[in-house]
Image 1 (cartoon, helix red, strand yellow):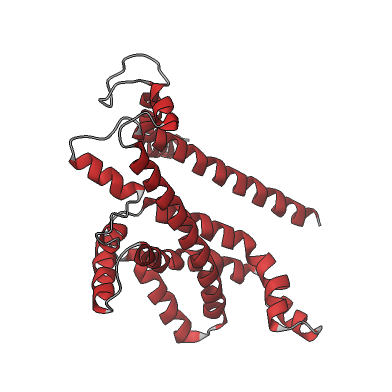
Image 2 (tube, one colour):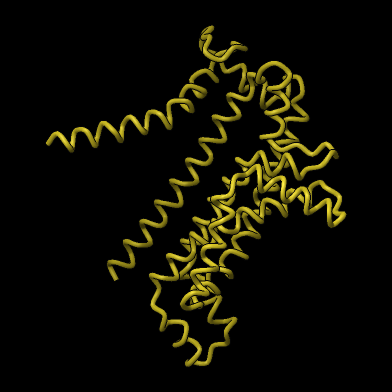
Length: 269
């Protein structure tokens, strides 16, 4: 009995530590105070400033948000494609070769972002590639793809290995078997990998900072860093962060509910 109580207390403490800062920002997004933690009364003025563009530097902030979302979508989309193909290839390997490739796939996820960022910066300089939008997208693809591989591999393990071969025996080409047999089976893992890659790209700072060059390209993370160095964060960041968190939360709820319903239908069959 005591172990269950302690376990529940531990879980609640962990959840509070994880979500209290976000809740704190969300609450103080409904006050006009420029100092976080100073409540001056309920107000939606910060949201109005954000959406009407009445705050100073709104244009550059919106460009940073657009850059962040576009880079994240492109990187997540390409990473999902590359990661799925790579996962299929790794799954079909056997013995030591599969272990080696899986180990190499895990290194970018364990490797500190600062090392990845500096390494890619030096690589682009060595190859004489002008840094900017393209280099940031390529950098994001490089560290997002391993996460997609890790999301798709379990689905391949759960899948009946005879389904693909049966499709080939029935006259399907490898491409048709991939599109009509493998992809539907792997779709939940691909969606999870896409969402994970998207959020990783949104969150990234170090890699973006070292690969964006000096062309004035800003994502949300680099914009916040620049703004903080000027003497404090702009108050309108609070509603922006709150909206982004709610969007991600709703997306995850939608995906999980859809996956739960799909699994329930399969169990009924």
